[in-house]
Amino acid sequence: MPTQIRPLPSPPNLPMPMTPETHPGIYGKKVLLRPLTQADLPILRRFVNDPEVMRTSNVYWPVDDLRQENWFQSVSKAHDAVWFGIEATESGALAGTCCLVGIDWVSRLAELRIRIGDRQAWGQGLGTEATRLLLQYSFADLNLERIWLRVYASNQRAVHLYEKVGFQHEGRLRRAAYIHGVAEDVLLMGLLREEWHTAV
Picture (cartoon, rainbow, N blue to C red):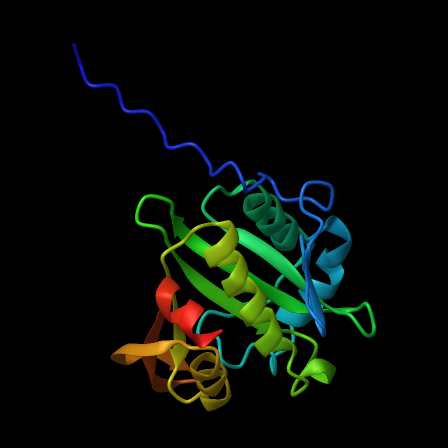
């Protein structure tokens, strides 16, 4: 009799897809992490079409309504990713996004990504708190064991943020990306569950 391979079920504590009804949000002092909605798309499109916001991205092209809608439908149905809008609690405005992508439910790991798209919100600590909240969610709610990320070596502000919340340097990919025609090194950083509990 041939071996039957069954897909792994989604974790019971992760509603799919994430909606305001199934996931009320994660509250901090400065930010609220909440599911993205259709109403957020014009704001997100403005963020990703801002060259200053996207200057640390090596893959960039203008985003139109159709591309944005296709992206939203894709991430809304994904079982290996969790996306949050970062809402500034003081103003109630959407300031950016953060996510866990490539979630491996067997090895219990995921890649973290974050972007503060509202330039007026830069330097206010929103990214730091959002990262901490997402890490707490990763380890406490999703029961993940390891979170990792990629960051350009020249983006020292981001590197400092990740070091501050406990990420360790794990490797350096030399000239692994081109930013505006300049070869950039990419740093690999990681954080384990026990390191997070020690840090907090």
